[in-house]
Image (cartoon, rainbow, N blue to C red; front, top):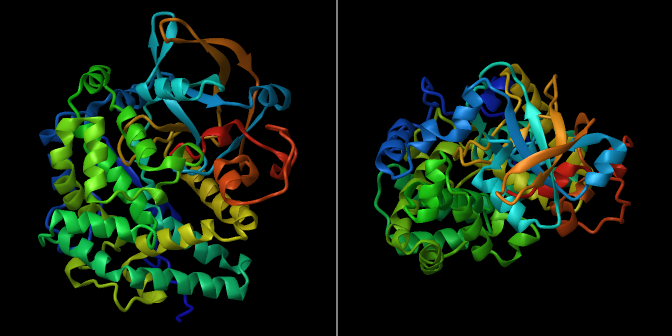
Length: 474
């Protein structure tokens, strides 16, 4: 087992890793570097999605992007069960998740005397009836860069964070983590090689491909996340149902489609939104999509096969590589760090998350990423980072933004509009809430019970946050 840790790109600065983990949806965006040998470039795929799908225009001019680019005040909503704690303690902490420490929110649009929730926000209000709603007003004073964070591309960040903080592991833990990472990738090598071959233009039969994918997800959990995002993208871009058309008229992607998919595919998604469990086989996927929108069932399999293979190659491999020459059969830790840092980093991250000692490691590894993400956003003038896998409506509040945001409680009127009621004087603390207050902590780890002190000024060992109630929404 090789023990040198090779950081992706070797000399890449942390800012470069975070830049690579963001997708630019602006009109003058530059394509990312990509591995050689791919059958289609990222630019070709993006052009296809924008121009050849019914809702592709939302990838370049949807209401979320227009809101950020307008330079006008940005309004966001957040649901919480900790409102009274927030009133008492007046502090708000970060939460880990797909937005890397940013507070999970949905956009709001001014409408008459109220604020209209984005369809994601409307879904949150309907599906979380026991929560309270708070509203943020962020006045950036200038257009916000329309660059969204893509958590599928965080593998390099995960690997670098491991390299910088592995001294917090015992030698035995470190060795076990490295061996397990390599073993799982070797175990899945046959299918991972099929993915690369597909990205380079080889034909694969749809049914065996999806059945193999479903069987490989437990070995390489990251594939479950990739699988889900591909199918969610297909649903949102190709749907033509009445509900989707109404969303499109408002400049919004239909978020209810992928929410319905996730909860139908995994029985426990309501307790923990864990996409490592998303693994429908060929027949099950067609059935699930057919239940959501029958007309889309016929095309989902071929789209998933082609799109997933391409995205895997782009997020798994270092852009210096030739995808036609890579194989995972004789993988080593150092070799993977050079050739496939994205895949290795995701594997290391998933294995750390299921480690029995993760409650102790969480504030070390995850806080480092949250702080680095906040630093990148502040340098880029981004107060409201959004989920850039697709600009579907998931948006966060950067709690390290120097000028903060105004905060109110809000009530919903009969027309479905939100109306701010009581302004809250909150201090935004750019520090992660304790793992015990998150859905992940409650679902995965048996920890001593802690009092619900909400957002107290005490160290996070006793502090919960409004953020934790939605940190695992996606």
